[in-house]
Length: 296
Ligand SMILES: [Zn+2]
Image 1: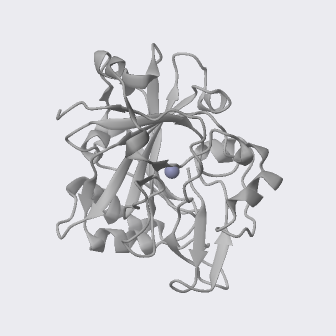
Image 2 (image 1 turned 135 degrees about the horizontal axis):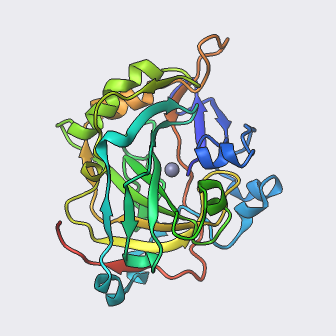
Image 3 (image 1 turned 90 degrees about the horizontal axis):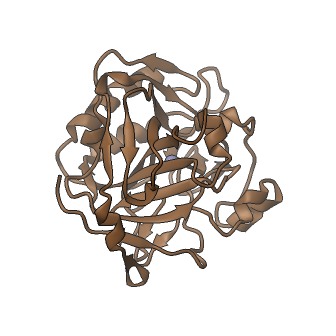
């Protein structure tokens, strides 16, 4: 769900690469990097036609345009996860990504109809400083980062790859990050693994539990809309569920994410992964719905 702006320095001299680090992209054979101006996402459709579609993500959440939908509350969004099933963490060259054995996990209800979704992986987006970093913005305001928990519709499709190609194939939970002085305990488990995966392609098995539910805010009110992967090939297969409430992480934790390298260990030029988000795209005719759900 990403575009990656890679840099050897802060705020200038950007070397920009757009790639497909997520497993959906790798599996669809679209893994590639190319030079593109990040301020001109309109160029992407030249190489990835879906990127010019009318169902692209992320978007700015214009709260005055949001429709309250009681039907979302009638079928509450619920999830269950198996903390022991987070089995490895990878440096994709664009983010860290925790891969999950989805057996036993389930995301249902809310905007998902009768389908059932299973967790595949989760990863993060951040910025070169904490005034930016999220993919979605709220009334124009960016957050310091955004977690994405990527689920696929195993009720209708036989594989993650098949789900990718369908309009209701994926459901992504988006969690906005804000900075406070205290470390986030569950994020700290991921932070502890970062030194093992400093360079692109490195992977570390996870020998302890990470509970995805502890990465979600207590108040689970959310916005939802139909969107896409935020990276080429930008497939329009995502039901987005963005929590209204953020979780808090420390600047120290984000700085450790920013220390990741987007290059391999033997690379001539060392590239630091300072920011890795795609800017918002037009909402167009799509409907933004909200569910005010309260605390779990
Ligand atoms: Zn993402």
